Length: 125
Image 1 (cartoon, rainbow, N blue to C red):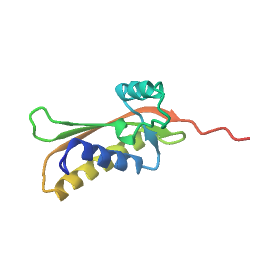
Image 2 (image 1 turned 30 degrees about the horizontal axis):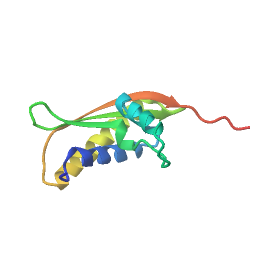
Image 3 (image 1 turned 90 degrees about the vertical axis):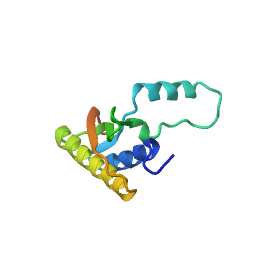
């Protein structure tokens, strides 16, 4: 896969989203969650963990003129959801554009952020 391929962009986008302080984690899509659940039923002794990239989707634009990045994140309790979503949007867009530019590719990038939940703080006694 090239340095501007889908797998690489997933990692760049996931890293940028997780760098936002209010982001508690990335939420995998249903297909990834089902695959992880099926993997746990196997008799394999190694633990199966969903990668952060599972919460990010990167697709080429239908006309091939750029990239569409979708990020599904969970926001930490007590944080402003809209501000966090905007911050994730801006950071992911900047990181992906910077990555593409560093590899000599100037393509448009659109980013969609979906907040899938709020991570509650654990109760301590």
